[in-house]
Length: 283
Image 1 (tube, one colour):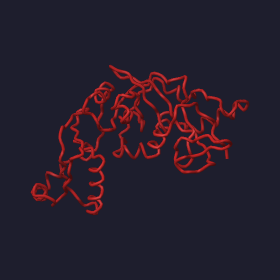
Image 2 (image 1 turned 90 degrees about the vertical axis):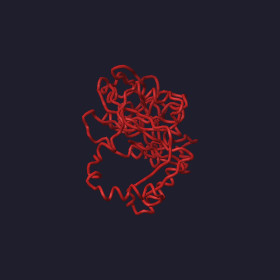
Image 3 (image 1 turned 45 degrees about the vertical axis):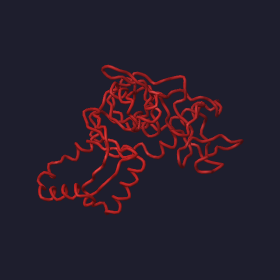
Image 4 (image 1 turned 45 degrees about the horizontal axis):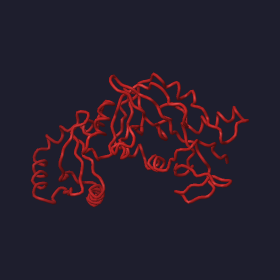
């Protein structure tokens, strides 16, 4: 089973767990409406949810005493199974987004084949070299609203759309930040720099075409960790953001998907505007 904690419930849990010195072993969360996605049972905290640990209430005390008396049961728990990401199909991702009570931003594992790289729009953006938030073009320099700096070094970051499919459905995924590097094996900054080195006559406002490194991924079957965002849940878009890309047989899925997505990607996604990519400032 996977438990998603949000807002105050997540904050309360963090404070309580730190206060325990990381030794807390029993958690009791009050919530409703269990769901099953990708074969795994999922629960999400609500505004009214409360969290109890170890000896807080009689129920947790009773369970803690039982656990200490039955350590052989605790040893049967397979941590790899408990922390494994839910594997879903593209159709199940769409079903999750359409459910009226699906209000929880979540991460899922999805195996799909790349059908095409979307052309006609920018495949990268120029971000702040420090925080990776989309840079703002000033009169003569690039600026970062997040860092409050008026003269920054711009670095190209992936923002590429790919069309993917599985046995029954197809979707559009967005490669943001490191996920593009994981798929193509090349950093966006390297590809942009190489293009302008080979095309010195092109101006800084020139739109760099989709690189061969991305085109070569067409036909590959990969394991994508995708984020179902608030925009997906509210019906604003069905395009899903990729936070990590692996080969299907790679066991290193990782547990902290939010960390692999990172605040870097979150900041970038929130600040990316619909405009053509520009050449990064050198220096």
